[in-house]
Length: 354
Image 1 (tube, rainbow, N blue to C red):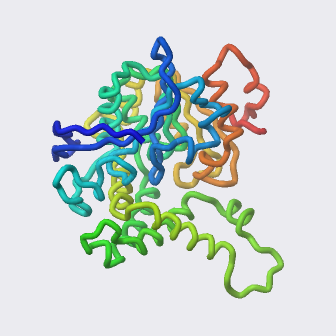
Image 2 (cartoon, rainbow, N blue to C red; image 1 turned 90 degrees about the vertical axis):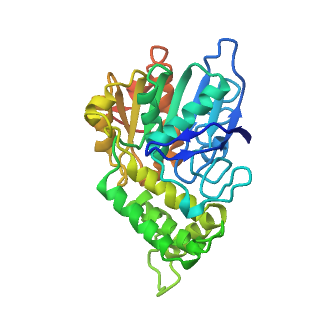
């Protein structure tokens, strides 16, 4: 991971100031002579700048986004705990602010990306990619700097976070707040609460069918020790070992803040400012970011196209359904050179079937 540090104030949307800061980021591949092969990734809630690790279905050698062809940039978002300024970090002699870290929004996180782009001296970005919370940031950034991007790829995201999504996030924060160690002033506080929060989140990320297919137990005489129960605890403990409860609490609030119409006339007016050629992808079974939210984006972003993948894994389909995503995105990137996608589209549903 690379880092860039700055001492100039970073002013947040609420006018609070981060006086000094650090951006952690990863890059892969090299800029070509024309400097027009940049792929910029905005990562999701608990991911990090190592996109070749957590999004390996799309990024890596011989994958759709191959570092041998592209210069890939993936920063750790503002407020996270993987190298960038956040609740668990301290700048200079400053102690970690933890619960006193200022509130941030997805618009602040978009400005974080813009700051790094400026520091790296990149004028244009070929493709801006984001899913979920990363998609919210990518969308805000494409509105803030509409002339920067050639193509915009939005997956399982929205223009404004829903009441349903906020309810899930609040339940997760409540779990963290009910862990007394969250308030002990230590960086690793709140681990048990975070584990429970992750268990709650997993239910929103997946589906009935997804759980049945991977954790279901037919014709069992068990009365306890069920696979799905063990799975929930495993996923909770796994995240608690690698992530900060303070960052999780902050970032879930940032997700709740997402609303491209704030300070603008309407969502429709805000989306009309996007100039990048845009593809919006929905996931058929996504209950957290249902497809009508992506259809709204495609309807109101000028000349945007909407495609939908079929998955039994809900919101997590964007991490799992690599084959479908690769086919759709490759078609989007190479239109005019291939008609393969036309053979895969269900015309009635605008869905790719493989």
